[in-house]
Structures are given as structure tokens and as C-alpha cells.
Image 1 (cartoon, rainbow, N blue to C red):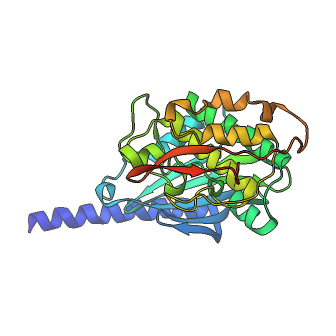
Image 2: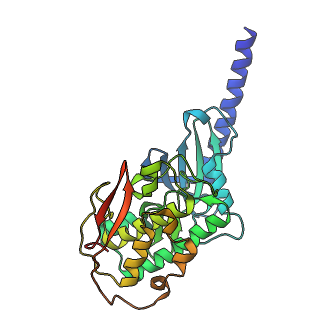
Image 3: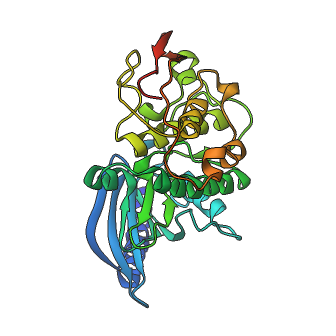
Length: 308
């Protein structure tokens, strides 16, 4: 009986604290329509009650391992706190505050208005041209270099995780839910999106942060310019007629090198002639080349003459 009484009192206290937290969230922010939903939880548009600031309210479901560990700082929150420490980077989405609840936590994020993720923007309006892609990539490189300087590995670079303010073309890198602390050694577990994963993951189930990021940047750039992923599957390249300047194609090829050590660093990409140039599309050439990639169980030679 005594044990039951203690448990009941603890439960009442917990419920009181939870209700107080929910009231704080409800009083401080006005929740609007849903912006997105996935395996992680849901994101809603919202406004801050005190000044009308547009925000995004992200509800993240805790995994079973951490469901009962109240007060534990979620890794996503820890990573965003790191990257939002001063001086901040304008190309990384800001975390304003967060709240802990049993079974889930709530993140209050800045919200660009009007905005759209780049995947949906390209689906609705067509691919980016080279000038637009350069502006996106330069801002993305700034964001990733900032993350690197804070010891954070984003691990899920793709158009869906890039917001663009449609009025200013300002880019924001978001969603650190797959991220991890940056380290020099190899990662042995995968988190992110498989279609943006480097070939070494499929071949040896290990990868390093720098080369993996370069690979995902190459796939992202190709997707923004061409509207599709470069690979249909592990063994088939998507054959497209892509006519872009030699420097642009060379940068994509460099990022998609089969050997991880041969891919560029973020600094290399930032200093690449294509990103440093201001000219338009010119010097179109066709390549007759191939790249050896290691996907799934074995390496396979893929002809890239029709796509790079």
C-alpha cells in the first residue's frame, strides 16, 4: 500500500509538471497548420504570442530507449545548441528554445516566411539554373563549414533539408535529427537518407564525415540542376542529356569520386572555379568517361558519358 501511495503521488507530480509545461508552450506560442510529418514526429507553423514572430513548432517522438529518461538533453537539441552558439551562421536554422515531455520533446525553431524546401520548389517550378545553384551551394558550404567548426556532422544533406526564403533566396540548413558529433575516425552506423549515402557505406558499412558530406553535396547539386538523382539504383545510372559548363560537371564528378580520399573538402569546393566564376552557361562539352563506384555488395563500372 505504501509503495502504491508513493507511486500515485509521483504520478500526480509528474502530471502537474507536464501540464505546466504544456501551458507554457500554449501560452507562449500559437500553433498553426501542419507543415510536415514523418517518422520523427510533426512540424507546425506557429507564432510567438509576445511579438508575432513566425516560428516552427517541431514535436519529436522519443525512441523507446530514451522515452523514460526525462531531463536528458536530446542529441538533436545538443547539436543545434552547438551550431547556434555565437557567432551564429545565417545559413543555419535557429533553435529558439525547447521543452521536454514524456514520450516527446518540442523544439521552437525560426521560420522563414515565405519559404519552401528546395525539393518542393524544384518539383513545382523546375530545376535551378547554374546561377541559382551557385547561390544555394555557396550558402550551404558556409553552413556546413560552420557546423564543422562547432564539431557537428549534419549527416543528412539533401534538398528536403534546405529551406529557401522565396523573397530573398536566403538558404537555411535544417533538421539535425540524423546528426552526430564530428570525429576524425569512421562512423559504423548509418543515419540519413540512403539515396545520398556514399558508396563506401554499402561496400564496407563505414564512412568518414568529410568524404560522406562531399558525396551528398554532389548528389544534391545534381538533383537541383537535373531534377533527379544521378543513380537509379546500385547498378544503373540515370541516363540524361545534361549540358552544363565543364567546371560544373567537373565539380559534381569530383564530389562523386568512388574513392573517398579523392573527394574534395568543403574548402576545396568553396574555392572551385565554378563557384568562383560569375559567367553563365558556356563551353558545353560531352564527356566519354566512367566512374567506378562501390555500391551494395560489389563495385560496378558505370558509364557517365551521358550525364556528366
